[in-house]
Length: 261
Ligand code: 48F
Image (cartoon, rainbow, N blue to C red):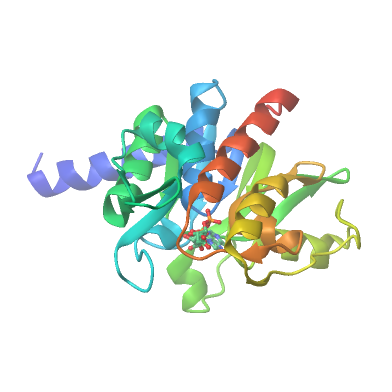
């Protein structure tokens, strides 16, 4: 067989096997930012079949750019265990009261590698455009190629069934928004809706982001900035301890609830 055929056949076959095997998963996460990457690794290590669907070409979400494209991030003492689990290096900030700096390129690549190496499937350039909704619970995702949606092509999607769906889409909490509007459901929030993100207050946002990490409707969890947006938390900028801890928390909640497909 000519090399051209071997290469193309191997890619098509391997990708098809990977996607076919992911049509039914225990946990489907939307967005490959830091919270989802952390969650996915702990879920996989606990034996949950886990896949992430990311609309952009590069997973990593808001990690790559550090603060205003200065490619360094901050993490607090109480999130170092998670960084150490991924083997990501950190340096204490001099006189910095428990803060540490991390090269944002090492953080993004370390989280991605750690997740994939543990067995998480990441499908990049795949956008979640809807959810599967069975018997008053979120039961999966509706997916399409990002370029198809960007070009406005009229192409029907495919579906992923899951025991739990995690909205890890960051600030806009896209999945939760669309479930509210299309399924006309009420969330387990004080208003039944999304409270909306507040302005910057670092210490408050770091705590509220983790506290807000929860199941908001049967089958639908939120973590990271999506959870913060749902519960009206304050934003916090380029400090990532809360994101990492939120990812660990959502994994723990799903594992404790035994949400398997
Ligand atoms: O925003 P993002 O990095 O998620 P996060 O885990 O972390 C937030 C921090 O990066 C930062 C912060 C820390 O202080 O404030 O913002 O909450 O990543 C969200 C990912 O979701 C993808 C998006 O491309 C990004 O990579 N995404 C959003 N909507 C969709 C999606 C969608 N409909 N389908 C697939 N992926």
